[in-house]
Image (cartoon, rainbow, N blue to C red; front, side):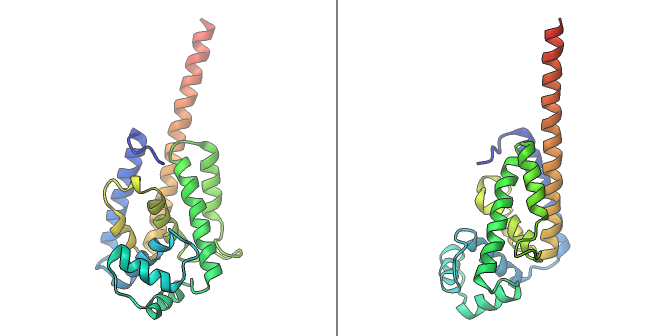
Length: 199
């Protein structure tokens, strides 16, 4: 769980919110297919082994969507996630990204290094997929719903791969910024303790 009451976390979340708004405006009119795809990714975040039939049921339950199994398969294939094993690998990678992000945003240097390493990795068999950053963004918000203080999930789901990639880079830059702030705070505390001991 991410402490959203922490002032630095709040600052990061405000910047993410502004970035999502900017990216949404840049994307222009709402593309219903991209939004549906985003919602499919959202339900898969809850069960990486979910097949098309179960996705249809979850879409109805979570979003009130009336979608067919064939439409789900078509969207998954279009996103290069038609093969269940590869799809699962993308979501497992995104889950690792989300977990390390949750620690990095709190100023854990080791977690940031892990986040930075994982985010650069290809998600499937040494192959980077266009959709992987988009899935990681959605996974972060699904796994840590407390960070959605500005109710940006619907906007996030409507971002296509390119805009989601830019948002993912912003998340990475914000983690760096927060980690640096945390590091400086610790260094100041250590310096103060050393000065006090010298007196």
